Image 1: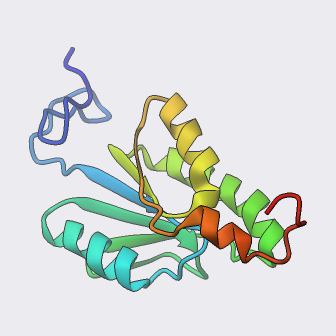
Image 2: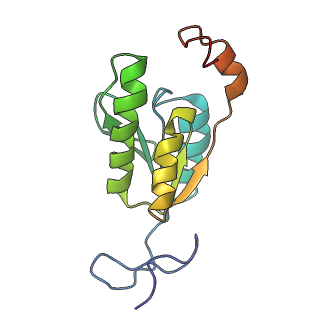
Image 3: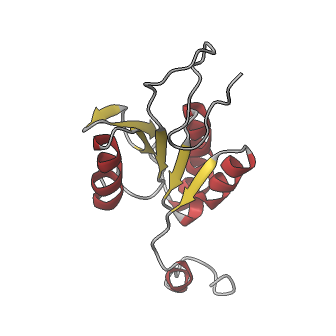
Length: 149
């Protein structure tokens, strides 16, 4: 039996076990911090990938599931505070990502590194796209104890 995926352009096997040449590569973007219509994530990355023919899902805190410009937005509950977001929301995003069965997972926030590592341990292809200067940012987080900064 053929493998499920041999790179971005390789053959895919349907859930029924039959080859499907018309199946699109599925890319799932993950964010716990950015709004769902973030300029960089949604407009520059997700929409561009959808326009290029990829199946694109964005998992993020939001009120409801919607499809916009070819991008499916899968919501997780909106967190009520920073600690809730870092602990509970990260787990919710990870579980939602696993349910997607994507070819590639692309995360955008440093707090999603544990989810990215778990996906990688499950054999998934993972892209870490954290554009913030995290060490410098941590120095400005006055809500963190001094010994952590």
